[in-house]
Image (tube, rainbow, N blue to C red; front, side):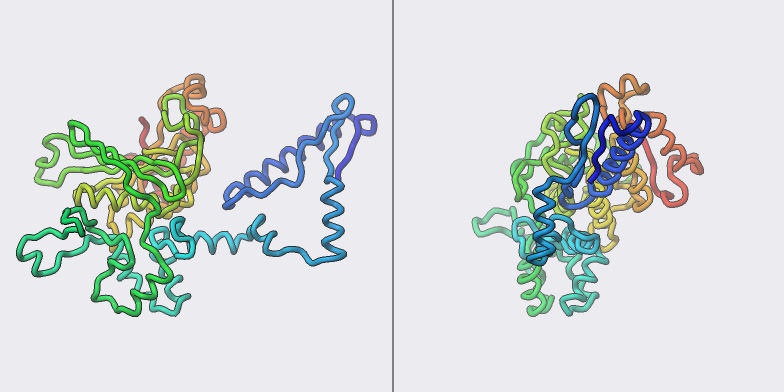
Length: 404
């Protein structure tokens, strides 16, 4: 308990204590912000009494409950772990994520190659099985030799040629994989992306806006952008088809020009929900999808954990096999997220400025009030100081930044 009155302390000492408590609260908020659910702060600003006096103390009811816990019954460890998960439990939940649609099953599309290997070992399977899982999820299925020779398409039960070219269910795995392993995967894991195709709207230039219904509620958007006219024939190279993906349902940044900002932040997308947007884009537009940009709904670096995992999955050479130079994460200027992204990923970085002065940027992009232009550009210059062509040096050797 901390209790002090104006009459007992000088103004200088009282202000020093108040500043210390506020600073301590800020540190706790920062440290708990990355947990799955924010821990309840056990302190805060109390009621003011008289002229500026401040009281901060633990409620008597909580104190009595603590005494009862120590004297009569043991603490409820399960409840405590639920409210205040340990680092080990938290990182275990991130490395072995469950699907939303089937909470009893592991979400394989939310796992990186290394995480999948560790999980396979934990269920007494060879880590080399990871190649079969990655190929099943991220490589296009092949037609049977007889159908391929006859030029036939795979069709669903209604005779429509809309069967996915990718395995979206464990049951779709190749029969060449052992039946025992397939049965085990069917029991324990899921290829699901926890989103369902809702609609596809095609513009005159061929751009497709795709909407998805999330398994836990809400609609997110993805956009498939075709090559510019004539780009496909340029230098004999394949044209650039880009999929723009969402990383959040809604957004907390409140940029004044952004329609998503009006929603506020509803939830972060899991890694499998981000990756599934890319898999579906390739299913819709074919293997011509060459680039991925995180410029859909949400601030990607406000969901750093899942975005970093998603880009790692996308750039796996034996999986979706995107070049690291063709996966771009765009940010409104979250400096802690930028620093972590450049430390842990070699993919591309885009910084959305939209204004050249703090006065204007504060108004149209409120995040600038916390991370002003001089700090933001200072980080960018520091990170890319050794590279004159746009790519970073050191830990961010393959990254680049741009402004729009």
